[in-house]
Length: 130
Image (tube, rainbow, N blue to C red; front, side, top):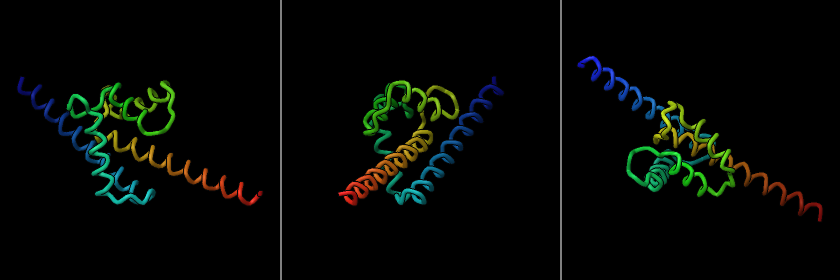
């Protein structure tokens, strides 16, 4: 019994360390590639995560994750959302912890930034043709 408790505690600590690493990496990517300061990214992502964690469980289930992704402004299909959740759920427990969420958020921000750049280039090309 004691061994079972020790193993569960060890597993919990491992998951915490993994989540912390994911957050640090997401903050670094947001700062380096997207120009979003780490503290600003952490504040915004923490707020968004809490907003969609409707039951205050500390993780997003499929419905909560889907709500967050749908409200991102990117027109994902239901299949795309399921694939995104599967990709985000790095520990494969069927839940999205904050660290996993932060990684997905960086990817979505990069996607949106790239879309904005493409739209700006298209507008410039359109103006040049006129």
